Image 1 (cartoon, helix red, strand yellow):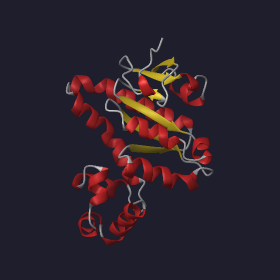
Image 2 (tube, one colour):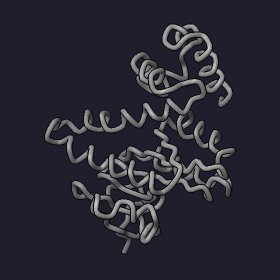
Image 3 (cartoon, one colour):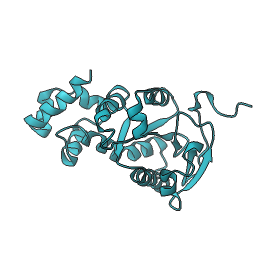
Length: 215
């Protein structure tokens, strides 16, 4: 009877170019935005995951309402982070209503869990990101058959976008920082002096404050 893996974080078969979506998203603006661009398959029992992009890559979507309601989203993120067979990306609605709650989830997801977080203004913007992720996965096998390297390349632009969310860091500085510190963990452990060499004194101070305040 129990067809779904324990905790809902076990392998799910995802054909190339498809997205396996949690049944709760059927008829949503997010699902409608993907229709015609990728092939959507809806399934029950995927919780805590919202969308599977491959057997190892998944999306957890945190809505404006989730943020305003409290910290219940944290359990979902932790379950995926603790899963040995999943690489999770958090997509979070950052709106005028939820903006005051955004720093807390940003620090929890990026610093405490070491996951990639992508802020979006709407479900339509989120659908574009998911389409882009799926298209990257469908292109990559012909270029590089090594799965581990493919996954690193897949998350790279989204890691860049995560670092850009740190106050005082734009796209250029984020790129420079990731060349020197290729992971969030390394960046958070960098000294002010090390950061100054890359982005200058003012930005280094802001980055240092961002990371130390969350500890």
